[in-house]
Length: 110
Image (cartoon, rainbow, N blue to C red; front, side, top):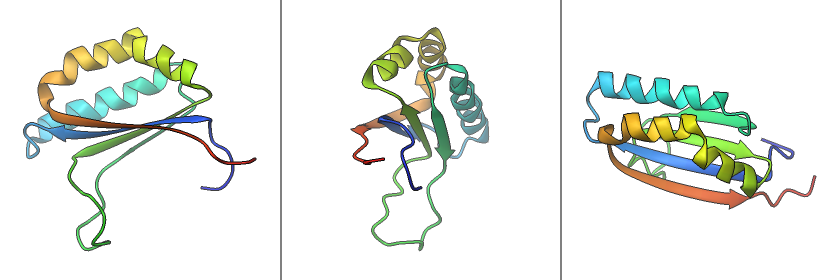
């Protein structure tokens, strides 16, 4: 991706307690898509790990990835406290074995 998307990104890697459960995966996917309704979210990318053999240095130790973009860290804080995000946590926490979060600021000059 070229150009400036947003000032702040929030990347979350989810590991399901039951990674072979299609029901758990479907529930989490639907819940992740619902987060796009939060008005401060400027962009969203939901994905799965790349196929094995794609690149030996790629970490595939997760089941689903959520990458969100915000105009500012203040907007990300608004997202964190938003009722839809709190509902997401409450309704899906039991599905998750672990969650890793990576937040970053853009260094793009344009």
